[in-house]
Length: 254
Image (cartoon, rainbow, N blue to C red):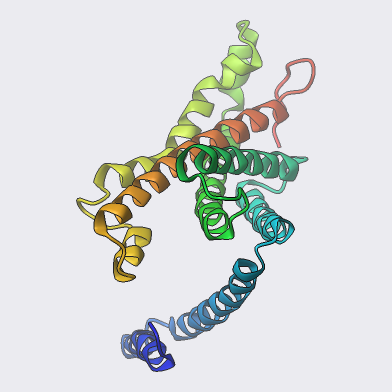
């Protein structure tokens, strides 16, 4: 969209949605209006900030932006998992940060190979995509694992009494949590390009990028998401399992 008038026309869809909600008495008018306003304000602010970052091209500024993104993703994921488990924030933050850094390092050094490692045109968009999925993966796997461990005290203690180690007693629960977190990513990979065109590829096509190039970038992104989500969930679930046992190997229910 090149003109403010086009943005106004785009907002017309939300006006129609609000009118439909009022007509059907759904009670969603206020929520839709707030969501619309926040979307416009947040994306405009992000647009201006990124424009400045792209123009300055400072590695410290890029790292500062990434730091803010990681911090927000960490807090959101921790809140979705649990606020009762102690020292969960550094565990989640470290897992998300590690998976994001290793994914970006691999992508930049071996795949994209930009002129400088901190090229904001690549680092910030890719980091945002990876962080979003790592956050969701951490939240899904962590919440499921904490819930399962808290409700399976008898089964876990039975395994322990029969001689199983803490890791053996919770191994299946951990595997199930990781699988559950990866299901959305795997399902998307199964049907990408056949049932749906992802937003990234659609945006590139709308901007005039060659379809084959857009498809190549989308493949890269899907592989990045699968890798980062698996690494994040593996680290988060491992750390959570450690927190449910004391040094003597006894179960602690939070």
